Length: 446
Image (cartoon, rainbow, N blue to C red; front, side, top):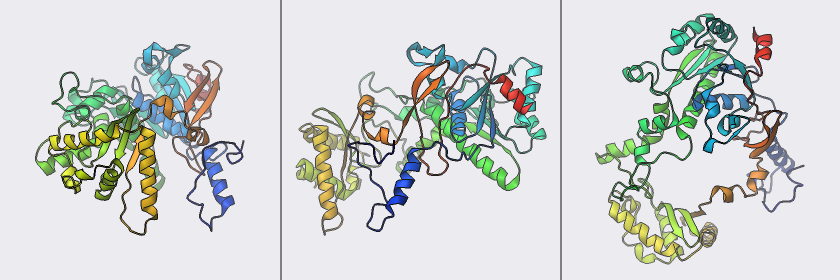
């Protein structure tokens, strides 16, 4: 059904809605963005061997490539990748864990025991001569010791892009010392230093002062995304030069890249950045506040935004003490906490929707005013997942897709993490049967 004929309370806005807009052009563009089926697949001539083991970062990287049309062959031992068993609360479908199913997008499955079988290593090496990309997550040097590392495989395939994912990379003393350390999500998070900066302040009582890990597998996802980006850049380089290359992904590097601001702040203040909980080290007000029916996020960091927030909350008395942005940056934590408490005295008088409506009305009025420089305070209700998923925009943007599989049955997965009008990612199937494509792969590539 056409997006524009479908009845919905959600309005469709577009940047091409001006008076001189070509209406048919932007309607066609939106239709393309929301309907990826039948579009060209930009990586449809790329073959990838994913031999990552017990490591979701490699699996996640392979999924990104697969959604853009690459033929991804998941190579695993006869008993399957241990990742098949990782699942919340022990829930599985026909013995397969939910995360593994979600990452089973558009993939082929082949069994090879490259760890123990010389014959299977030779088969893998033969496949590698036809491959564009290899993704592996074994301990540093392990694949090389089997004769299936980048050093050996690139001799027969000079255009090979070889992506290796480990905790500390391949070539440092740290990498050698911890070569046997599994690259798990939690080791990536804790070893990067970022976990120590997440959570309530260290002055809070036990156990609230503990450092926190991200609630999802952020370490694995950031490593996987980094591997995909590095692999794509290597493919572009190969397109220009004909040469492949080694892509060395260290999980600690990938996740610690998210700590750039704290490091800069440490140099600026000549002191380490402590854990500051509900505060923000650079912008303020910029965080979460309680309200009548839950929590709201408020962003009013610029001076004019802060003053607008004070007008909305009827707390103009605070303006003198916190007039300029440097006055609100929490280098003096108690000062920032005091401001937080004063703002919360007012937010507790309203519901989240009331606060959001007040901020929106003020922003619209400021935008229409002939006096420039009006503030734009942002207030948004903090939604629980079940509240967020009920929003009409998910349906309009086709952010989820229901798929059918002979073994797994019917289930819904996220779809179209990037919207593109000409060569979008798309989900053609989701399947996970061990070794189901053995014959297909051998017939096509061997």
